Image 1 (cartoon, rainbow, N blue to C red):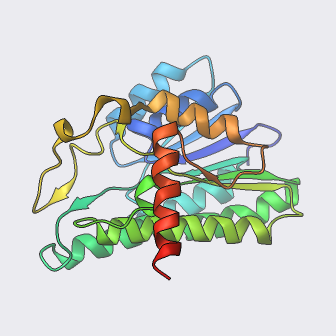
Image 2 (image 1 turned 90 degrees about the vertical axis):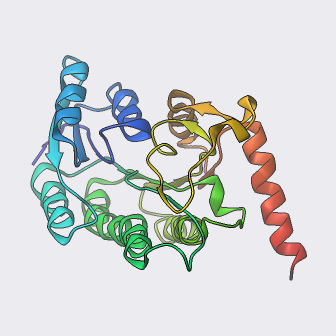
Length: 251
């Protein structure tokens, strides 16, 4: 157990938003449990943050039962966690009927099953200590229906609804729940997308792209403001509002 140490658990911590959450949470936490598949990157992150926070590296694949079980054990044995950041995820680009079903089921498993399982494990400990923070990394894609991202967008829309409902249920617990909905962000995410198509960065205007530093800062700055859905960037918020309005107009 971490005792009185402020502790965060961040999934998908080896790169992108996950690594940046570790960096920025190092100013708020004593211990960061960094969960990812790539051990060498976790070790490099731990070395980078040495002197700011103790980074405990946990090599685990959250698409697997074993990986989820190892992370649950970390919550029980190394917690309680004050911050839980469910960031691990991936995308696949292509038509639903052209993509392998195993790939799409893996997205559901990682984005939904792993998230709700880790939340269910962390919440009792957070209640006991009088509060905590849960950040579920969703996507701007949750607001906008589009071709070639059916399961990805749907899984992120689940996270938005789930986070809003969970916050309502936990309103008197001191636990804050956030669904962070970034748009296009300068990370490895788009380069690593699988599927029948390849993502073309050149089609996205420069003003639409944000840095991982800005996205994570927007997430952490929004804590305490009573907002469950956090969409960084003015352009992204306009897109999200238009998407929501379009859904209402279709009724």
